[in-house]
Length: 376
Image 1 (cartoon, rainbow, N blue to C red):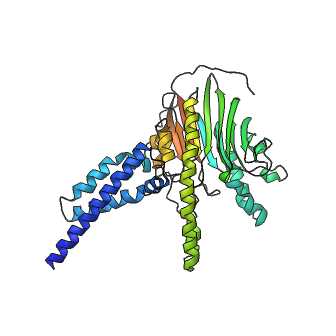
Image 2: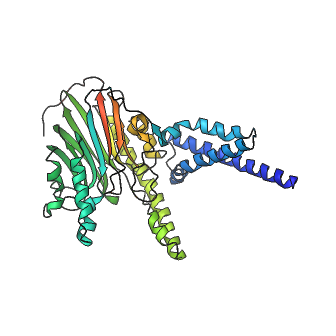
Image 3: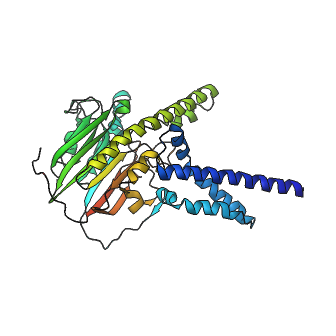
């Protein structure tokens, strides 16, 4: 019996060592964000699970009062920056009365037009459009915006322009600036937009949209982004659990979608990185990154800009309102040389889309020279 216990203890520690080595490899991939292969994407995707696994080993060895507890404990200390990407506990300074620039990012899920038209269920679609209009923000960046003036409920652009006079738009059909049908990225602003730049990717109707905005005496640039979807539809696998062949097929589909998603996002984020580097103005980047906070796209942008949730969020900040619900794929980033973030909020009580809205308030650190006042 003693021999069996010793064997199990040694085998468990051997597993702990393998986990530690794998964890260090994933840390390196996430820190460096230099490996572009899709396999690295899969490995970085496992970050939450390996962090939890190391916590479990710490508890096991601590309960046994074994020196082996040091292995996973040290691994967790080394990976503490990734824990900070996962959970945040900032307090709001109620004494700070400075008025900042507020920015909303919200994936509108086609304004749930499918449910409205196909299933004749109007409630969710109406609430979704109403919510994006009602949330108070100086600048609103929306993804998967659906607009159709033939339906009063889907005159989304007109409704948003009731509070945001200025807007710019990139449609999923190139050249469609009127925004009729299909979907697109849009930026709505209470302040004048003097220039825009756009990039459309036909896969999943994703893209980049930037707007140079004159805010009082300053000019800033806001980039609205939606990268290639992860393609994870866990609910389909769960629903197919009684049918093994169907479940296997759905799992295989998820694998291929994840793989192609990693490959496409590497290409797309290179374009986003170029836009960030070329910006002459203080920059705010927000949108649907379709990637966890440990992946290639997130890491690349984080090398240039601060993440708003990490700097001012609270809790886990999960933004995906579908299974699995424990992921954060929507983000706001900001140039900390020009801004400081006062508040950040995830509207996790807003259930209408498959994403939750995220909102940040930014304070200018110093005035920026206004370079162009020719408002388009």
